[in-house]
Image (cartoon, rainbow, N blue to C red; front, side):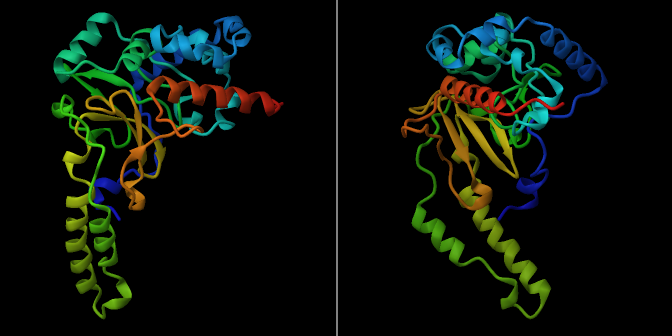
Length: 281
């Protein structure tokens, strides 16, 4: 259970709304990308790009994203209605240096390369990779729940272990139920007091230091990119809205997902999905 501060906008797309100027820029970029000849994307299977992305990620058209730019595909891929297979412009080296200077941390290598050579956000797993933008002189990631990350603490190591599982289960067992109260106001008071205890255990800011929210699956289910600590460069899933602690995102072989593997796994899946479904007439 979540308080209002954590449960607002639970079922919205991960990418923020754009103002008029941003929308015009986005439309122009999408049209430009759609005009790219997708020869490289179509002739190079995405699984062959996996080794290269770690060291030197390909340009957007080489990742296959440009080949996916087509209006009727937005309704056939989960989350595409949010990102529309659009990629924001990559950061310049100077912009990346400014971002890292402000946050006081060097970003993980695969993610740095993505920002510099692929895009600053957009098309990607679920509702897309949250864009990082310079707003009024300050860098920030934008999307549902992005504000949960404390950007002043990105250099602190992310902790693998969260709250004690036994303590969490005990607290869950003590959650008030409405049918146990004769007066609805008494129940409201009880559940409010319980939620304060729950937030202090599950939603403490200390739980997510050294990480940023990178994507959303809707309904407060999110994914984090770990910036500092032993899990640096890996993706963790966040289902605290369903009373589960954060946990590492694993591939089919049980290995932790790095940023590059997370992104390319999505791309491979989308390519297979679209290849198996006839285009809309």
